[in-house]
Length: 290
Image (cartoon, rainbow, N blue to C red):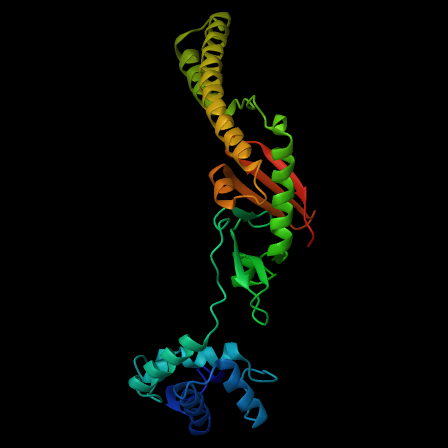
């Protein structure tokens, strides 16, 4: 372990972690300010104004670094690190910081429905750190790991809702656009057909008999699948049609009602598109300003 692998306030001597007094004083100062009720941003400004040295090649103190220090319980001596901060002081500082930290995550009806086309992770809305009236949607991968792992764009809530509203208004104004007939997909029974084929080849040598039996089995499976899909699809179609009809005479779209007929929303940052898939497998495409 070298100097770069220990926390601020510590050093390595003869293979052991020891307290580095000058750095430990900075840590204590940060906890003191937090105990007094100062926010992480306020503490960072004080340290920068006093020209307190920074660490890890940082040009200045910023609130994430302050929070990282205050939330590090190793300073209380619970691990392999010597104690710099008393447990009671640690608890008091963290309680104050939690109360001072702005709650940026918000609730929204579309949470859990919106996915990123780049990494297939969910989007989540946050208040802008500097303007809490401004709401932005982040792909969770980009938010937590950065652009290196996902090149998706940050979406303004107003732009997202505008695109979704436009898509649904088109359906509400013209309900005939709702797809009545389902798209038949064959892959669900193809595996069973292949299994049947292998079984028949083991017991029947005449290829004509094998092909005849396979054709009958495939047609039977297709008919059964088509019938069940069409029946289920018609129920979903009726639900979508009913919901859109109820929203037709309203001034504003009912997002709760929309989520009841919504399967998922895909954000394609590259092509600046939103793909809205309904429970009846219908996909609505709409452009979005990014």
